[in-house]
Length: 155
Image (cartoon, rainbow, N blue to C red; front, side):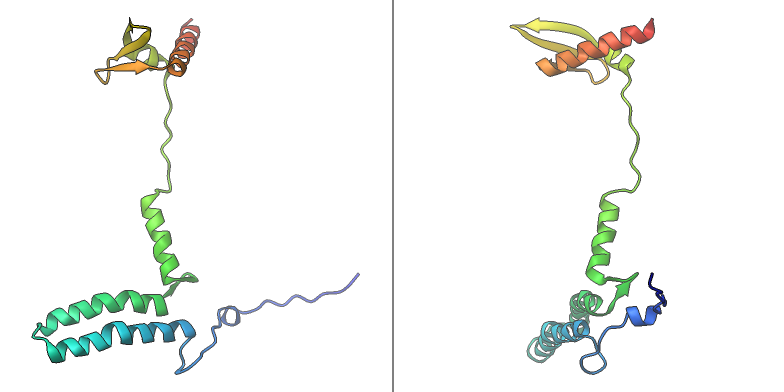
């Protein structure tokens, strides 16, 4: 049997990212380069060669620069910006709680009142929805089972 020693590694060491240049990580350097190419150069050219209001240019530069800087620098709960935004979007799109829905066998018996046979096809009149519905063979079998189940539970 071997004796082993376990040592806890501090968070500072596990979250360390190597700095490449100017005390920036590779991701941050790429973000700075993108910012320079997509924001600073077009902004400078627009100020020099066009008569666009500087306030409008500032707002446009801010709108372009914010996602780039978020991608390069923001890290929330150990996730990079794009993954964090993706998970937040999924959480909004797909709610965490699902509603429990049941089907009442008595409702299926009581809602379909009139059954009509027209040229070998079955049509039912749905009282709640006030619509005539064409039934397929599967739905007819299912309706017969629901009807039989409802009759058994009523007795």
